[in-house]
Image 1 (cartoon, rainbow, N blue to C red):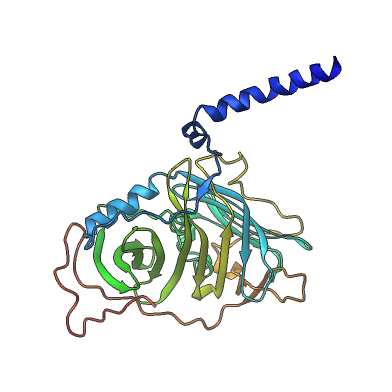
Image 2 (image 1 turned 90 degrees about the vertical axis):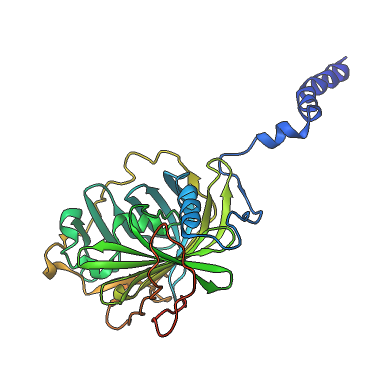
Length: 344
């Protein structure tokens, strides 16, 4: 009797699973985990010779699918230092938070921005402090030397850039290796800025972004790769982001195992932290600016990040891509000594 009862119990438990499988694979395909991604190659969305309008629509369309991104499954690495575990929260248009933790030494990095201010904390900074500046004063503060990107530009650097359809854009221009470049003119606190956006000529995925100041000095370069399709938002997002800021001697690589897209962040995600033993220093006063930026630490000091001199780090001249405006299509490549150069 006991064996017969046990057999009937097993049949009763297995019956729903059998019915589910028998109902067809189509139902199973619709059951996707929220964090599911696909490694299938991205589809071609651009024509053989895409116009500027076509590229702008494709890039903006992909970015519009994302309002927020977060992950607790990232690693942050700088040259010469072991990687940090990274947690990120990103919310358009300009909220973000990046926290780096080392397995041995604990919290090492906290970089963030909310609606009021921007902050930067590195455990091994000299002098030890949590540096911050309100957005209304950040443009004139010395912090711009360490972090010249605006909060919105930093958010866009994580793979969700948006072209201002009312802005000034030039291109597209072939860059080799199946890539096209678009140059945009932006207003900055110290004059006009030039942003160069490089996209894949088939998929319109953004693979590189460059920002130069009015004097032609490079402020930042961001390279994006390993794009994957997020199953819920249907957006293609990079899972490797390389950020270089020459003026701050900053270079780091972020690798993300998975993104959680359009998931509301925690209530304290964008609250400026308080670090015990580290005073809050307002860098709106140039005298309070640290003379260094966070880069790779000595591998022999628990692998943490440290502050290093910002001297050196020469810039790279921007490209001169011609005079095609948004809504217009270049008929020929720039002729003569126009100053046009491919992105290196």
